[in-house]
View: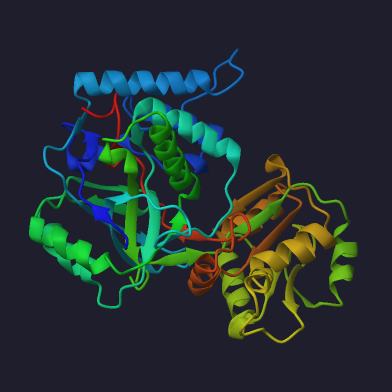
Length: 435
């Protein structure tokens, strides 16, 4: 069962709902140096000081910024800047947002404490690979501060929508956070009603949870739990849990966007790469898109990919835009899980185009990602990258199938939109965050 539990959320105290946004930030893994500096300057108590910080001149590793984060947590708890709610609660959360094509949507979810389960031993399933370096940083940060900062975004399938219905009444009251940031309206409530909490727990008891965003955070939580056990900590229920935000997969606002690739260094000339793709792909040319036509490009790509066909858009910023459509008939039911993963558009994009035809660099500094088609074509037009590659989103059904089979999808296979806001509520599991 997915064991959801109310918890005493650790939150910024004494801040009006419309000002809470000044204390929050995007997830730690989407920051550029410029964005990090902007949030550091935004407010002295902004969460970026806890989740990321800076490596200062003369510092060779992360120990300095982690130590400063621990210091902030200690001071902010002592000074009452951060305070734990008196009673355990679930935290209903609504995001109202626009898609790149202008469609306005609403997504409902809720923050909860979830009992940790090892992969393969329960009903919590991953779908992406993780990296040891990132988990090492998060382990030292979370352990030092005694809190889970970034929520793990997961989804479940409940046609009856029991949890959302159970928490709906609490969303009619006054919110504890209500602000707009980058065209997303974030609203948070607190539900302490025992009957509503029990109903939400029962609704999810027989459901499976699939991690959408936050694989590193979840695995770090497992590592912290294991370390606590090795150190003889056996009477701390909170270390057995982590912070999760859950949404129903059937929610109208449950959106997966594609993650377009921006290649900065390629090892093969563009025309030679396109010629090599001619055997497997139909290549058609269209005039280069003008400014503001990125969404039209994405719409055309969706049309070409209808019926399960693999289709990409290739734009080097010079000359025409090319659409690549795989010649083979779509495979409606791939065999084993390895074949399923290999048949994903994102897998074929890397195997056929990025690695084979373009021999592009995979170094972190040489490839960028964006869900925005306008930003993707603009990057090639401006020379920010050598080639922009646009693709269609990975179907959420594929995510579920691969996760349940124990498979792992390629890096940046999905972009669940919009991102959760970090800093709305933390889950404390040890001092200095915990009382």
